Length: 115
Length: 117
Image 1: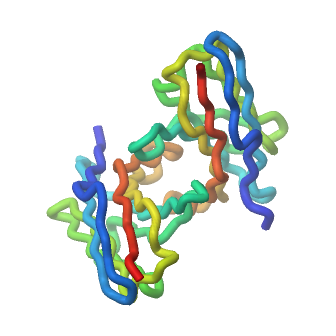
Image 2: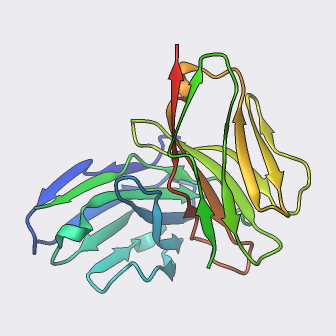
Image 3: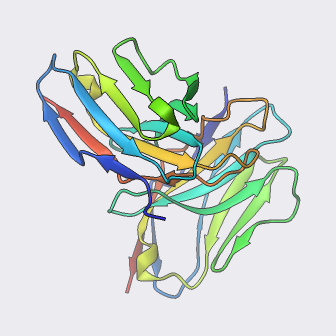
């Protein structure tokens, strides 16, 4: 168990640029989640996948955001035309599907700063 | 919509003492799941303890236990024999039962716990 890996750990970009983050879940986990956390707040749900299927998307996930999980393995989260309000920590988590109370295993996050 | 409230932005405890972190939530569901997650400075969130709403018995994990009051919609975390490594942000979280949202953990704003040596 190597844990959930997120890259990069930090990303600084200029407003209007596109950015892409990667998440490698624990290999046997079929569920993968993306959350966003701003300073002084708890994480907010963005989207989740079961295998390669994107099953839920929050209304926080505007048209500028897109997430993929090809082949049900790693996932990418892309933000197009970044805005200063996108500055946040983007957290990825994975879990096995056990019926509801499953433990989420989180990565260390990607800290995005939009200048 | 479900909400989770943590009314204590910061708490402090002496090493080896006991501390209780508060959490209340709002839901119209009768079955759901509750969690406490810890986020140390390393940023990686770690599950501390979880509780199914249909279980009346309070969950316990070593030095961590909860006081689950379903009627009051309260889910407090008690940390006994506090250790320096317990210093972190603690988040209370709510999740709907199967049939509802399966991805959406609803988190509170967190409580920052400091442990004094």
